[in-house]
Image (cartoon, rainbow, N blue to C red; front, side, top):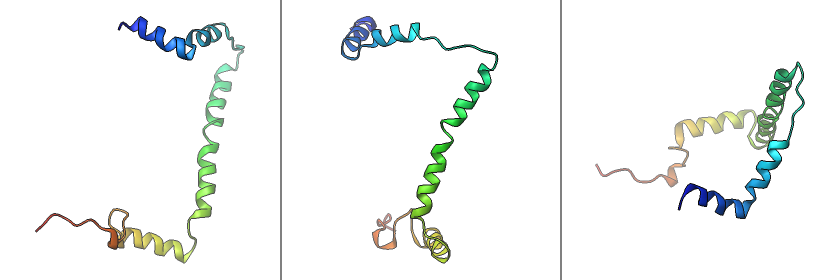
Length: 93
């Protein structure tokens, strides 16, 4: 199969040519502040995501002394995130 026939096969199923025609005729207004508008949009879209994730994780994580104990257990007791009861046996000595 040639690349043209593959594109035609995909285009029949997804309608890529219609989407491409729409994109060719779509215009964006150009003004003197285009760079700053683009920069603002690129900052405004991804920034709320980590903020929301931090908020949701803050409700799941323990606070105070429990947090210290949790970090101590993960650091010193658990092996690769598994408790000692679930450890896989190492290679024979």
